[in-house]
Amino acid sequence: NLQATVMSFQVAHIKKQQFEFPTNPKVLTLARYQQIFQTAYNELAKGNVVSSCILLSMLTGRRAETFLNISELLKHKKILQDKLSGQYFWIISLDISDLKKFDIKDQMINQQKSLSLPLPKTLIETLLAHDPINKSELMHCVHSIKDKLKLPVLSLDRISSALYQLIK
Image (cartoon, rainbow, N blue to C red; front, side):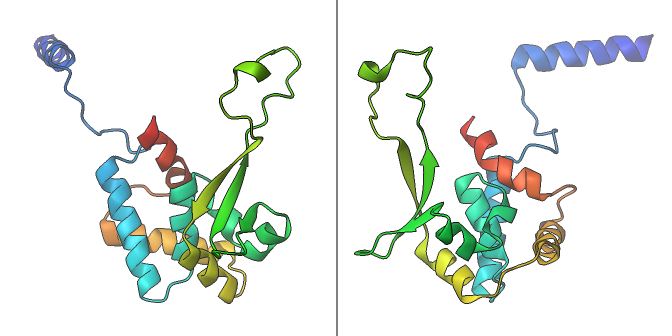
């Protein structure tokens, strides 16, 4: 009983002071996000092409598996290239105006139906110059980053949801 009482006082004190501890291993903190990004970037600098999929996933919030075959994305116009600048863009559909129950077309600030998110040209060109990557190579790269940073848990799902968690 004494231990339970002491524990309840500690919990009450933490709630009152609004201490927040990063105890949830499913959520990456900003510092961990930066460490993973830096490690993946260093791997890319060493010639590990697979890490560019992880970097693109961290920048776009999309699953890393999406970028395994980059030429398919270009073929299906998910990624477009500006002919003048050579810059690549991820096309995100925003068309909510098709919903019949909402009459908001006049109130919409953005009248376009898509958003173009610029992507680093070097990452896309690195992937295009390489053969399509398989998922086992991607998983090996994730485990390598996890081991280098001595993280208890790291997966493709945590990497792709990291951007959302940081923005939220």
